[in-house]
Length: 246
Image 1 (spheres, rainbow, N blue to C red):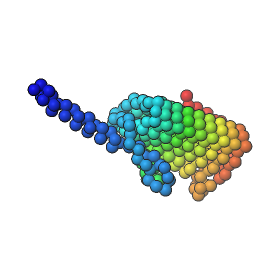
Image 2: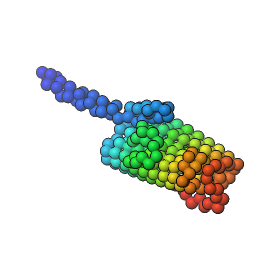
Image 3: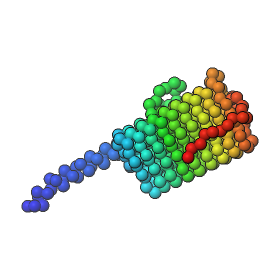
């Protein structure tokens, strides 16, 4: 008789657990697989709240969604997908080849129309070791690729993009951005806005906005060390690089 009395409570707990699991799997992170197609929505395995969360992944491949709030997210090991959501987030992918979105992925879903206002926080994103893909999206973001051959784009806002070690592909995005290649043979593009491109060490390619059809922009390119190529920007050999990220 006692076991029969417990049965409704157990069923209620099971129903609550299944509802929570369904709600969690409904949260996804968009990953652009083909630039001509909508991004692939990857179900999140670790989901935050609309508040300020501290989230840690595992040493395996995780899909982490921060949702709202000013979150602190550490991916740890594995090839992770992390989308911070709205708010001023601080994201460190850790080891592995990670794909990190600072905000909600709206820019990837909607494309790159000029002048589009995409809401988002001022995010700080660390790629860590491995070949990472980083996207700041809305807000004034700081992106730091770390070791490996990284792809990083600041997207909307006035961003600071650092390639660090490796041969990186770095894009400022719309806004007045500063793009720093670091070590390695890097490819730097200002995109729209008045940008500063700093090649760093290695043989770099630096391309201002006029190269892509924006004659109104004023970009400054500084190759620094190595055999560099610059196009459609004002060459400047005396720029003091005072940017640093601890």
